Image (cartoon, rainbow, N blue to C red; front, side):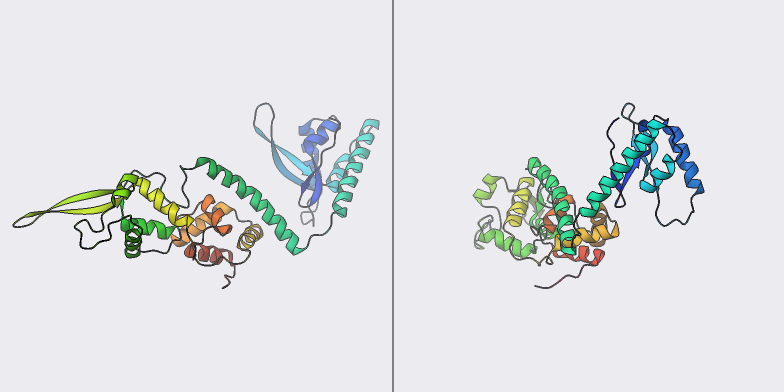
Length: 318
């Protein structure tokens, strides 16, 4: 190996014990042994660690093995025991590589807090945009939010109202019935015997089915007919409401940015936040729905309030 490859650890350049072993033509286990001998002689309350134990995956067998990363000081202590002309040449090369890396780091302008926030936001966008692309390619199998994916089970209109509510659409059973009548999905003339049953158009679209229940009376038999929303109808209505969603609780200014910064500060993963919100609210939440909430595309009040509470974000009123 002719090239010296330095990486970053805790904001400073480091080199691996594997690379040292190869450069100085030593067995890696011997280099590991020498490092551990040095570490045993170092003060246990040292301010800055010189060596970081980690693992690498072997290129041939795919198994993980231990190795060390070391900063300039760690390399200097280790290389003191390497003698010979070739060793001296490699020491000089490594010193030059560390000098060059540290020079580049020193030349980098100090970022303001706003710039740091913007950098975090860009990184978050790149991560979440990749997830968004996956969502787009999976449509129509994947619905917005937690709407059922092409469910084969029909549900009552009241159950559909609950499903919409879980997705941030503030509508109850009565309002949903009223909306369906006004928009010609259900018969709206109360004088008709088929009042509140699906219109011909709705039935042709496959949005509803009619459940008939026979009721035995003392002197006659009657049939009660109830509209039920099919799996196709659930997909249709949830997407329709989410796309036309207009008036919902306001997401705090810079909400996505604040959430990402709070996660970074706490060392908390996005999956951990999702689990915490689900535990707190009992509502559905996944990566794709959280992405849309952070972007301001979905604004479910309870979920937003839960995120703010968990991450201690002040929820501002516009």
